[in-house]
Each structure stands twice: as C-alpha cells, then as structure tokens.
Image (cartoon, rainbow, N blue to C red; front, side):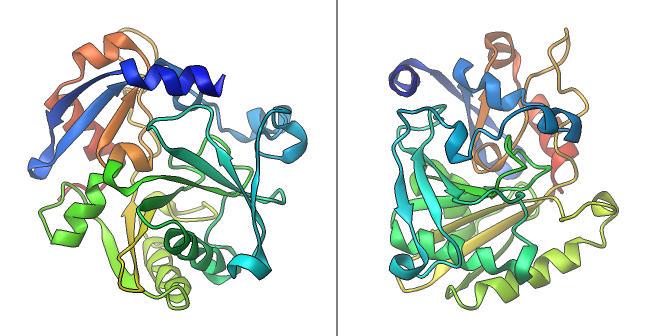
Length: 277
C-alpha cells in the first residue's frame, strides 16, 4: 500500500494558485489522501474504531525506528514510521509509543521540547503538529509528522520576514526555552472566542532547525477546523486544511475540486479557518 501511494506521487497533478498576501500555494490532486481529508474525528466515531497509531493495530509490515529518552533526550519514547498515505516523497509520522491524546499543551508544553529536538535530530526536515481540531486524523493518539522543510514554503517566508497571508506567531529558540514560549502563546490564544470550551487552542505548529543551534517554530492560530463549504455534495469541496495546506500545498483528493479550485476559493478557505492579515 505504501509503495503504491509513494509511486503515485510521481504522477499527481499540481498547479499553482496565488493567495492573500501574494503567497503562491501549490494545489495537489492526491486521491490517496481521501482517507485523511474525509476522516470523521468526532468522539463517537473515535470510540468505535481501533487506534491505527497504536502498535497492536498497525499493519504487520510497518517498520519502526524507535526514538528514546536516553538516546535522544526526549521526554517520552516515540516511533518513527513511514506514512503510508504520503503527500511528499519523504513523509513520516512520529507517534508517541504510548496511547495519549493529541494535546501538545499537556505537561506545560513539555512535548514542544521533543518537537524541536526532533527538528535538530533530522536537519533539513520540518516537524509539524496538527491540533486535535485542526487536521489531525488521529486526535486520540499523540503524534508529529515530518517532511522536507523545502516542501513547507511558509517556513522560509517566516524566516525572510516576507508578507504572510494570515497570522503566524514565530520564534527562534533553543529546545529548553521552547516549552515556556509555546505555553505563553497557547495561554494567550485560549481567550479567543473560537477556543472556548476546548481542551487546547486551535493551532497548527511547524518547526525546523536553523543550523545555528536554534529551532524556528511557527504557530498558526485557527478559527475553525474546516470551512462551511466542506463536503462532497455539489458546490462543496473536500478540503480540510492542516499544517501542510497552510504551509503552501493544498491537498484535494477529488479531481472535480482540483479543477474548480480558484483564488477566490483559496481566500474563502483561509478566511474561514485562519486569521487573515
């Protein structure tokens, strides 16, 4: 399955659409991502399905690269896995070894340190976190994902100080300082109306090593998980933005959506799910 989906990446259709702030977004027609884009993440659905990131429920063929506390300085043990539903030619999932909810805000954001340590351990890669209400198809099991940093152009725009299409809160810090910084950011975002009553403010988070001993982290505050035109009926688009989409590559599993997606559609998507500047 993984081989088929990675091979299919060589023939996926791509085109470009200019978004707010003059940022160019790549639009990718990727049928294999329909599982993730259309995932039901409500509590009732989650309670009825086995967690596909837990070791006992993974395919027998799934290879594991353990990342540990002693060897890697992490606060917990993780499993580095090839993502069998890739968006790019290098796409990994870094799943917590134990089953725990997708909440980076827990334990005073201690896992933010793990995130930046991973970015340093794998230079040239971007480590990203999709919040439980912001694109995570497994909000019941804590995990990061990793792709080539070059496939996340938003990070380069942040580094250069370019105009951004929506609000991004960023910092360049050492691993030990990142938890306190992120905890402060999330505490400030918690007061926004969209986040009331939820366990964690709605965010996507990206991190990459700068090469100077620091890690650049970018937090994207979210208004909503999905736009009001999300769906499969006529006049709707099967689009569910997460970190990759907001970083510059919008994933569309359906060909009809890929053909009809326009700059106006992109603006509407970002206006409903982020804080446009």
